[in-house]
Image 1 (tube, rainbow, N blue to C red):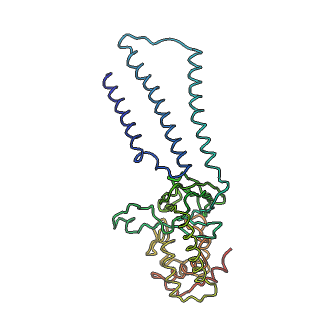
Image 2 (image 1 turned 120 degrees about the vertical axis):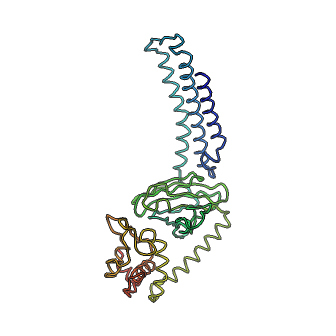
Length: 372
């Protein structure tokens, strides 16, 4: 019995040692920021403390069970109210807790210090994508999953970045303090990038903040860490840390793109039905197809079909209102964050796609008139 227990104990210790040695595979992601390093070190420290407690407590229990068992003639010792024992088992845990609480408190305080940032980015969670606003630079864009549907539906081999790739990553300069302000448009989301040591809930109606400073250039991937609905697993986060010179060039490029988009969306522009349908198909694929499906048939019992629906073939004002404001009590979220042109385009597409042939062309002016 003694040898068997000893072998089991040795196997457990070997397994623990193997897990610690293979830190890159079984531990936290390699830290790439000051906060991430503090979290990593705190995690390692507490794990070693836990391991030491495990060895001492279970070692003593195992020794006592084996060496003082009744079968070899030992009788239970009868004692109570031993003052020294009570002092020892009170003081030792207190000292251990203080030893863990001090570095933990220090790390939490550092995580909350968002003062004097070099860059501030507002991250807004939507079902199911992220919207980013660079507050000083005046840059805004949406970041959506870029993994092809063929991979998601099993028709193509999965890539190394499966479900962790986006069309528009967050770009930040290396060595600069980046403040992230989080909020949400619909339900609770959570902005989480493990390698940078950052995780902050995004709550509708509230503004929270956190920060990071990337140590070196690289691509750091994360996900929404809050169960936010049907496509919770399909809204990744990608942060690209680049040299300051490359960041400045990126900012210039983004501003030029935004200027071109603003010119293309001139309220005075006249859109043809075919132009609106072509643009609307792209907007639909990016925002609506996940629930209502590319065929417009929806998911029976979960998401209604748009093909032949009363909304998509009824008065266009009602159709626009549903897209703008959502539908309370259902999974249909508000899409006010889309531009007037994008909403006009997608409504036009839905009213003229599949078996819907209304012939309506919804203009950006129609949408603007119904915004609340």
